[in-house]
Length: 154
Length: 228
Image (cartoon, rainbow over all chains, first blue to last red; front, top):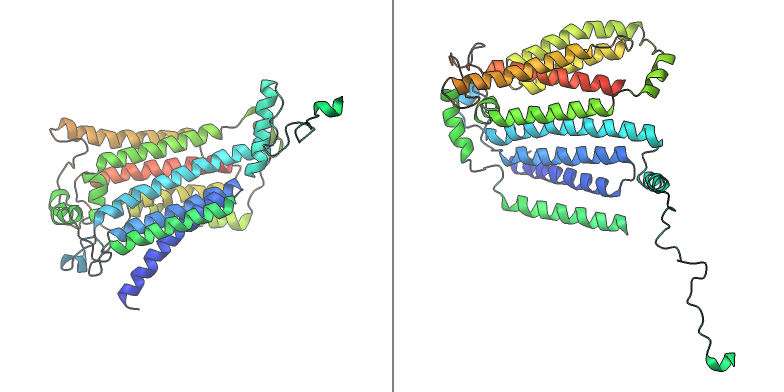
C-alpha cells in the first residue's frame, strides 16, 4: 500500500470513531453504552492528535539505531496523548463507579426510567404531585368550553 | 426526531473534521516546537526517549497535574464505592467462591512475570517506548490478576494508600529539591550520564519510578474497589 492511502484510512478512521462516539452518546438510552460511546470518541480524538504530529519520512522519537540518522516525528502530540489516555482511564473508572451506585439505588440504567424514578422521588420528598406529561391535556375537558350565545340561552 | 437531530449533528461534526483534515498538511507536518525539542532534548535531559523528556522535563508540572487528576478520580471512586452498612452485611452473609485450582496456579505463575515486565517498562522509560504510566498499569494488572483468582484474600488498602502517598510525595520532593537547588520546579537533576545507558538522564528515571508506583497503586486500588 502506498503511503497517501494509509494516512487517508487513518484520518477517516479517527474522524469516524469521533462521529460514531457522538452518535452513540446522543442516541443511547443505556448509561453504560453512553460511557462506552465516550470511550470510542476519546479513542478517535487521540488517534487524530497523534496523526497531527506524524511525518512520512520520520521514525519514532527514540535515539537508538535508525533514529540517529533519520528525522523523527513530533514528540509533543505523543506526550499530550499519553496524558489524555491516562485521564480518560480515570474518567471512565469514575463513571463506572457512579453507574454501579445508580444500578444499586434504582435497579436500572435506562435514562428514561431513571428520569421518572428521580422525578417521583423528588416530588415525593417535596410533598407535591409528580409532574404530568407536557402532551397530556390540562383538564379532563380538552377543548375550550363551547360558547353559548345569549340568544340560545334566552 | 431526537435521533434524526443527533445523526445530523454527528454528520456535521464529521464533515467539519474532514474539512479541517483536508486543510492540514498531514504526513509532512511543519514542526515548530517539536523540531526545537528534538534538537535540544538529548543534550539537555540525557534521555534517549524524547517523549519522556517532554513528559517529565519540559512538561513536568503538567504531569504532576495529571497525577493529581488521577488521584482525585481514584479517591472519588473509592468514596462512591465505599461499602455501606447494607452492602457489608450482604457480603458477610455470602462469602465469595474461590476461582479454582487452574486460575489460582495461573495467577501465581503470572504474578512474578507481570511484576518483572512492569518494573522493566517503568525503569526503561527513558530508553525505550514505555514509562511510568504504561508500566504502572502492568503492575496494577499483576495485583488484580491475583485478586481475581483469590477474591477472599483482598489486597490491603492501607498498604496501597501508603505506596501511593509515598510515590506522590517523592515526585513532589524531587521537584522541590530542584527548586531549592537553584533551578525551576521539577528541573532535571543529577548527572546526565551517557545517552542510552540504564543509569542516565539524571532524575528522570526516579520521577518515572514514582509515577509508575503511584499509577500502579491507584489503579489496583480502583480495580479492587470496583470488584468488591
